[in-house]
Length: 280
Image (cartoon, rainbow, N blue to C red; front, side):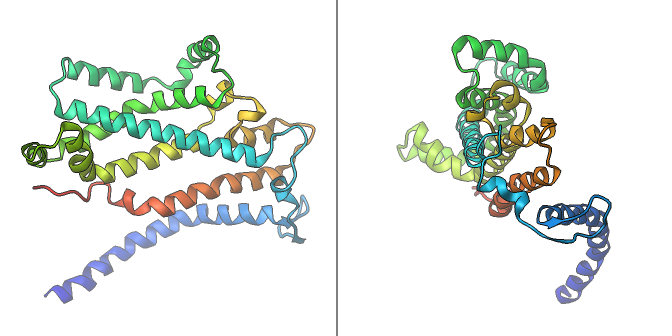
């Protein structure tokens, strides 16, 4: 009976797969066309390319006049995304546990306030943040924009981690306490492994959010020495004197590749976000 039901279930999934393929095909063709434009030469009024070239990728081995070095910019972007992700994971994993397990006064009020803070778009706070960073000397620095981005992402991270901690049975912690482990040891050795899928998912979301952030770095860290890839890419559109649309597309592809690599490496954790963990 089981052998007969399996082909039937697979057969029923084909209409869904076919529909998703048809919907995704135009987007896939756009990405293929984008990549081909970065390695080919084509006349303005021509449909097909006339030859191959790597000149659109010259920003990899030579610094464009008036712009930052691409490898310095890439390093800045990696530092910005990685540090933001680390701060969000560390604070959210601890704060979420406290709000889930400990009897904190005004916990409901605090959680409501956290969500209210998350409801405000970062652009509405940009002027106040700009003034504060200037007063404390962190304007136009990676440290300043990292702290701001992490603070803006923390409310959602705390809420997500609290939800994951709520699903962990109390019996696991009680067993550790009975064996003589400290509260910190119980949290680190027994509880954290139970919420590993949530930590991985939150880390992936935070990294991708930092990698694609534009407004905060553009306003709070515009200098060439601390520039990130999103600001570097936008500078091509603002440069009327040396406008190179094909190089702009090449930088866009370069900007996209690390995201695909990160997603490929951590995709299994994202797909298993509600899996894992012992229940008793």
